[in-house]
Length: 389
Image 1 (cartoon, rainbow, N blue to C red):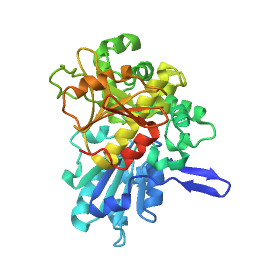
Image 2: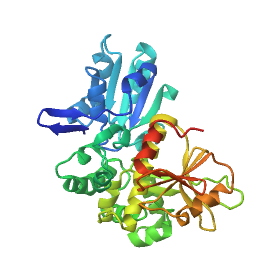
Image 3: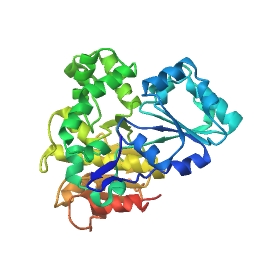
């Protein structure tokens, strides 16, 4: 799908952070991202005129599945870059890509909405000849003056939905038959009713350390299957796993991971409830949105690990960026010292460089050695690379 915004004068393209031309000057790349995150639009605007094969096109898929060598026959000396879209649909083409990288120096962009099929069955992953990048829904940096927090939380940030004239209907379509069909197409499960029940229960666990037994009971699905379903969501890039930060000594940390859906609009639709300001659910939504920004920043720019901290005594800090910055998220316009108790507990460890609380307050201030930041000011600083080791 596209990140083009329709105007009376035609579409306006929203520039993405990823620069495909620069990436492909260095090496071939895999580019993974959930459906409708804008892979096709990015390719169309960044790699004009390159040879491209879309495996969602039935005729293209059929001809290449019958004869993978057609690619080598069709590529001419002017083709320095070749795109194969949705490569997971025909992994055998990776053998051809491997050969053409070696013999002709072709640089490939191999895109997909899932790495699941590519991780199984001994598929040729090009032996280090291609790097991997991920594309995410729109970010604050990409939207610029088009960014609206409440619109982002209501609609999510999938380009076609954020810019849609009927976003709620589009979200229903995305989270309904589309997601179920996507999972079946990936061969993850053929029991669509069971997976559909699981999906709604999993959405209600968004942003938490999941109790798999409870999910199994609520979804009426065996516990062993629940583990597999969570893996499917991660492999299809619909779910992020946030590991625990375990370097605290004074307070014993929990080891369980937390899980977040990749888009706040998708999780709201799966839960069947809007995230309205002033409700506990809005706090969860703001945290999910910040998770998206931090994951995008990690994958596009920093490459640093992202984690969270929770002690066995109940203190919890939402995010730890690298090993240097603690970030707590509060959907409040007026913070007090009480809101900072977990950050202060972590501060006693004396292991991190800075302690931030991101909120809806209008201006920056300092309280008990914690920097309180308005959301926009935090995002500006993040994308300006101010939070470095």
